[in-house]
Amino acid sequence: MSWYGIKYNQIIRRTARTLYRKNEGHRVLDEDWDHMILLDACRYDMFHEADKAGKVTLGGKLESRISRGSTTEEWLRENFDPERKYDDIVYISSNPHIEKYFGKAFHGIHSVWIDGWDDEVHTVLPETMVKRALRAYRENPDKRLIIHFIQPHFPFIPLGSVGDLGLEKFREAVIEGEDEFDNPTIWRLLEEGKVSRKDVEWGYRKNLEAVLPQAEELARALKGRIVITSDHGNAMGERFHPIIPMRIYGHHWSIRIDGLVKVPWYVYESKGRDQDSIEKDVLDDKISSLIKDKLI
Image (cartoon, rainbow, N blue to C red; front, side, top):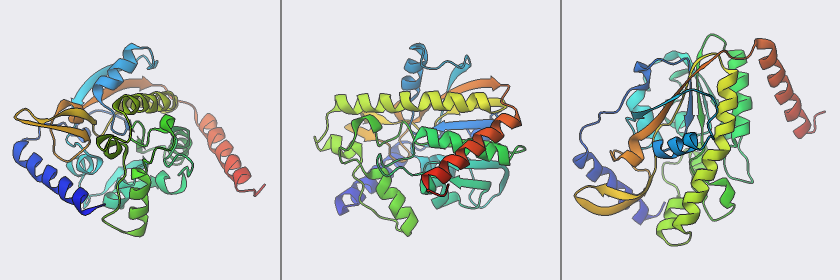
């Protein structure tokens, strides 16, 4: 990341902590759930619109919650203690933050962002997450799962190659153990006038539409009370603070505005699939991997 980018983020973070000192967000461990499906950076209003448009078909109940974080890292740190062991939870993630900060906190971590990465679209596809989550479910029948999809978070797959390599650069930095990295995200490209707001909003919604059917398929497969929610939202030009006219895009630490901290909390009671069906999904996944690697 450039010197300007680092200083800009530092100023935003310090200012936000001064202006937004009170965190009234909910703690996910205080809620009742058997398995949690996280849609990264999903605004409540966006999910609500999709639900009203019939793009959510589970028949569950949509509520909202105020997240304790406006970034993934902040959400993790506000809900979990990295020094504590959450032995009842297995975390399946397409986001490198979990490995970077909470590598030993859970019973198990499936880092799909490492071995399930798609080099063509520079992200982890929702279909890959479903397969890996079903495998984890089969292997850990007595554990709770947190399945962390990266969508609708950037990169916005329908936009194709527009120079948004922010997630890929972060992935590379985590793998190489670096703390600073170039961060050419879609939000920076928007601020620099290299992409239009109309295209960004379209891509954002299309990313959500891409992940919803996969999240629903997974919710139906799991057993118990399934919650579909998000770690945080995403600012799309809202004011940084009522008394400060500066506009915010993307997600920054500690900013307590609705676009960033109001998230969906969709509750679905699932009967789940039997273990034979899950076993078949896992077997099919393994066969597909062998074919891809030209081992059979």
